[in-house]
Length: 373
Image 1 (cartoon, one colour):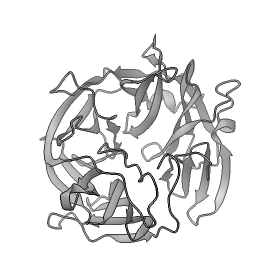
Image 2 (cartoon, rainbow, N blue to C red; image 1 turned 45 degrees about the vertical axis):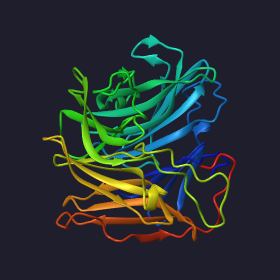
Image 3 (tube, one colour; image 1 turned 90 degrees about the vertical axis):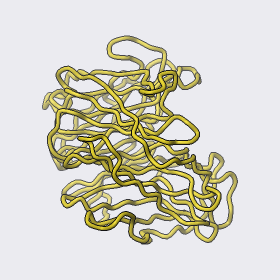
């Protein structure tokens, strides 16, 4: 639990454990739900930034199935002078063992000092590297500036001696067909399965009416990385309104537009992803849209918006198994229900569409706080 708003919850599952984090704190659980270890991020990273006073926030957690390691990324330090990516890496699949901690400067593009800080990081990985995307804001409460991607080779990050770590940055990303436009939000690095020399990320259109998504690719990410992008046509969509719930609540729950919020999944030459769109009568409700992209031909082959009138489906995330069977989880609220969690899915051989939703956890109380998240 955390007193922070928003809590920014995230978790990852490994063979025998679950690592869960919220702003300020993370914990390690067994798969029976027993809390085995819990610590504040401020204490955990105290060996990286001497005198760290601000509580680290915006956690990301992955379990790297290639290397059988856990990786965490947080934002920390003094955001007006010395912002950092705080990174922690386990030495094996047991998160109760040894970890290496790093503090990589968030205000540098490569080796060049800037006056920005790194917000809202997202993390993905493949067989070669860990990838972190972030929104860059001008320090001292300045405006959004641009998006940045950081590539960290696993050969450095997973070194038994805990460093040193090198990285490559790409910054000031632009829409490939509309160069005057910045992406509406950061592209999200993927969770990959199998080996590849190209890493993919997915982002939404920067326009009010979204008629495409942007597929970003990083070729040769470790030795000589190059970044490219292509816009892929999709069914036109609009940004969803804030979510309503039983008992009301003011303001509505913030969905943060169509931006992708959880990592795509790559397996066997396909990419699966989900994001939020407006749907239902007069586009007054929130739907979860699922996409499947064939990477070799860079084409969208499945495009399904899932929802119903009087309900809001939001913050969807997807995973597929070895047979390409899909599961999509989401939050859901409605005029008649508090915010809860549900899921849907499809077998790879099913006709287009998704199965009816199943309730995973019913909401119990109204979600109501002053910043609506």
